[in-house]
Amino acid sequence: MAEITAAMVKELRTATDAPMMDCKKALTETDGDFEKAVEFLRERGIAKSAKKADRVAAEGSIGLKIADDFSKATLVEVNSETDFVAKNDGFKDLVAKSVSQAYATDCNTTEALRETEIDGKSFALTFDEAVAKIGEKIEIRRIATLTGNENTIVNGYVHSNTRIGVIVAIECDSAKTAQAMIDTAKNVAMHASAMKPTTLSYKDFDPTFVENETIGRIEVIKKENEELARLKKPLKNVPQYISMSQLTPEVLATAEANIKAELKAQNKPEQIWDKIVPGQLARFIDDNTTLDKEQALLDQNYVLDDKLTVAQAVEAAGKAAGGTAKITAFFRLEVGEGIEKVVDDFAAEVAAQMA
Image (cartoon, rainbow, N blue to C red):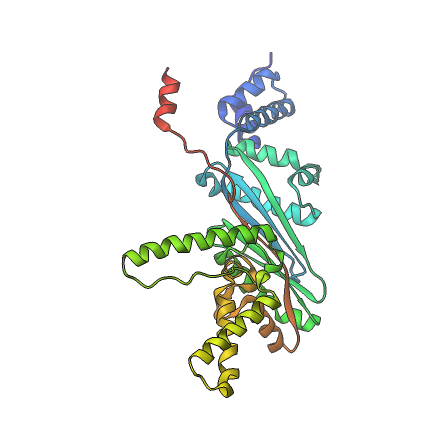
């Protein structure tokens, strides 16, 4: 049996960042063979990670990598169990390495990314070794990449808390216009980080979803109006619709006819109707597209100029640059969204351990 010296333990600890007693045990189990001891700790670390599989990782950070020429951008969500670990330098390095590897290999799933190679070994092994050092359940949850071309610029933004990241692609008529849209793309990404759009356009909504949302929203407003009436306060307008996808030519024609009928009932001179009708019809559309303004990026009021929608703002920016521009795609990732976090009963946990 080889003698295990303090210097050997220190060397192994420096190489693996494993606890001192674990390093001593690894060297003892492997009869002082350094390489075998490293492998012993690696396997032990991976086993530790596996034991954490049933724990919830809903904290973490978003990583972002953008091409120097703004032709490509990648987002990666890396989850941890606690916010404390998400602020750890080792975790930050792991996020940076993960997004760089996803960007370089064009992987769009965690499974595919783990199968890639980095520094002569599998990325899965590299990732799991880092997780073992950090000592908490950590996993890559989502990956998103947008790729442009000469006429399509891609830019992105990660919020200062690193919990929200957005990438945006803007297609232009020329490379010259595209270069002029770099800052606009980042501004739109910042807008999306704050306003939480779930889709690009109202055209992407499923009809059944819109129908169910309409019923639910109308019922909510009716109940709110009951309380407002009790308090003798002004009532909220109850919309007929909530999305442009519902405003068919027939619906708009009926709305215009109703506006004209109201103007006639008010004895407004018919020769001035053409100055009144467009504004009232625009108000009708505005009142009946609340879902679009909440969830569809192109239809939201732009935070930097709320007189314009995001689509209109980008179009105006393209025109100012001497060409045309439109948003063709975006991804927004927020750490932990959709994950049900378990609320621990600390007192019960302590009692269970003492039983």
